[in-house]
Length: 240
Length: 240
Image (cartoon, rainbow over all chains, first blue to last red; front, side, top):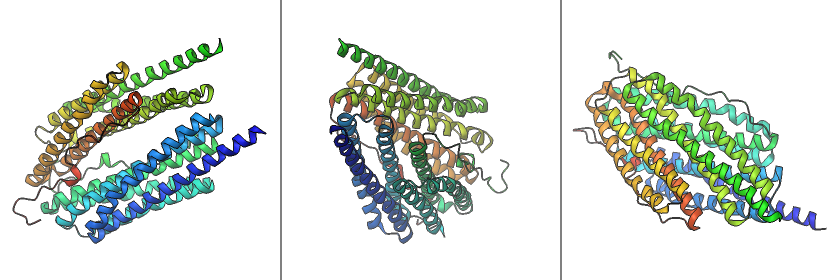
């Protein structure tokens, strides 16, 4: 019986790929949490570990890509299996990008630790980071358990992340105007917020991939908060 | 002779994919050029066309992904051919991202047209956008002609883009400190610069994919300019 044999080898390959995706996702969750914690506690060492740890995430993506190409070459999966394999590769790509953003946050920690302190900023960033991290956690749980309700719920939560980011943008811009000494700090905080918002977008992309994989159709256009590209905080008393 | 027949069908598929990639790249080049031009001439209509035009770029990526999956399912390409197919999909992903960044630039044009004018900013952004656009053009030319020298040259040029971005960061931060009315404008300009720098990174990823495809080895770690994550412009007279 060669057919069942081949099938089960493919299933083994897929199980291994799935496990790699989940462990990659676990590392990214950790990186997000640690980067936000390092920012809050001004812990340069923890931040450095996040930056360094991104190499492991990148290496995992490489491994997954290699395994995907191997599966494609050796098993020539058809239709549904093929879609699963391609999804794994795309999800790995999104996770790699999420890791990059966490690394970028880590890189900004030493500068922010030295720069003018913006009251409450680290706590706000931590809240935003937590929302994004929990989105990722639930997306991966939904993926592992094929729980599409959970995955769809994550898609909805991205709107909250957009709203939080917008509120932070206004807060940091107002700070800059009121106290020009905070300009460099606030610039880094704005970039961190924007990156967290983009991380939310990557998680929604993962969710959309999972839904497409399980249902064969793309989810409808998801609700979006106002884009920070449109944020306009006029300088008090200025004409603009 | 079934073998040569199958081979030529695969080649036809690949030629079509290649053509799609190049036309997608052409659209992205245009979007970058038009977005920068719209910023310079404060042309909201042109900016809106860039934003709208991104749908066409996204649709092309979808088409390419569908075609890739079709080729994988029907032709089960081996080794080298498989690598080509995967590369096409990855390059399409990078191009889609480049299109998104151009769209984001377009979205910021109406806000910047209304906001406090920052002398010389649009011209600086245009120069940076031109460098990125030419990097993309040469990367795609190198891809089409399998000219690896050209592709490697593009990799080197990313350092200049990083340097230009850093210089712009300092310029805009200084502006913000000297004239707080410029804070909102400068924030958008900082994001535009950062996005252009990231676009340069995506072009280098395309280059690395091409080199990997043609040589089977990844290029060595490329030189990087200082990261804008480390930019620190102290407020004049402040202790920071």
